[in-house]
Length: 520
Ligand SMILES: [Zn+2]
Image (cartoon, rainbow, N blue to C red; front, top):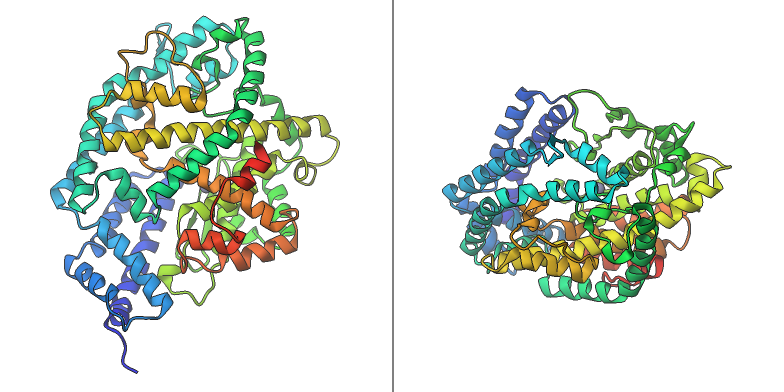
């Protein structure tokens, strides 16, 4: 049988992309584990080389033509074509526009990195500022710290607006109305469907959030010695009110005497996954020069899977390691017969869902005894309460961010500070403090400038995580759950669109119902 020209194209294209992407992942790993400037340069070069592979306009035209060819019927070939068309599409922008965007992003990134809020005459690091918001009981000093964290907004706003304009020009060049719409479309997300889902979630979790907020307010008003009506954003333990503000430091005592890596290894063993090869390749503990966050990388899509962590004895790092290993087992589970292009999750939503459902176990009454040992029941009950608050609070923050970004790209000329506070009041139910009228508080959030149109995936990941939990119908830590996940969630890789995958795992479209039953 004669082979389709698309198959011939794949025969040359795929090995090139596979090799370049593994090289890029290796360079990134060296950079993140050492901070080497050589690795940074190598990574930047490889990044450009990989992007060049996807930018050939003639190849893109061929892909579009093959997409209309009725003789191409094989579902795996059609899916690879779909994946390639979306990747090529992004790279079809004029070179000067791409360069202008990269340059503006680099400038903004430097400004964020160098910003130090000044509180009572002293320049503070981000950690020092957060420490004040976590531990200070004097409400006046908290207000000064909170306001100082927003100072960067005024300096950034005009630069971000230039970047928004460039991003919108790029989107229009590709036929979209704005950059938000473009990002969603390239990720196979339907805008109307996204907002109907978010609107539904907002409405149906409203009373649970309000009740939770009232109890948080009354506890914190006591701590800061203020009336509940004087409660402002400065009372939270982070500048954007996205985390649980109640003091949960005592939960770290759950980890007394616990080897977190060993405990996670045993947890995954109970699900039927041997994570030892992953842990052996991972970089687990703090070291100078090393990236301070955490991630999971699959270097070659052939089983070289590693995680980077900075484990310390805290509930946070138990959650993070469970989370990163959740991404890792997902990567071990692709059907090995899938072509390279499809040996990846179809979107970050399903892999985040796996990572989030695993991370949640660090707070769950049912899972904690296995993870941290018995005899810690009072702390375990506190952890379980805190999980619910975290979910409600985080969901409200994502609503603010997503509605704001959608409006920012639709009409960047509107009064964005007014819009920002309108949304914070509507979703997070936190009124703007006095004196914010001439500020640009929206521009103080790093992700608005440098990780755009991204947050919604975490919330959809949370919703899917709850649906998976219900579909399992039993504890995550059991061989049956492991089998289910391997077969239903991991094996298809990117052979299905994310929404089809979710349907096949949970038996229905993504909806907030399971999440609402669990947390609201
Ligand atoms: Zn993750």
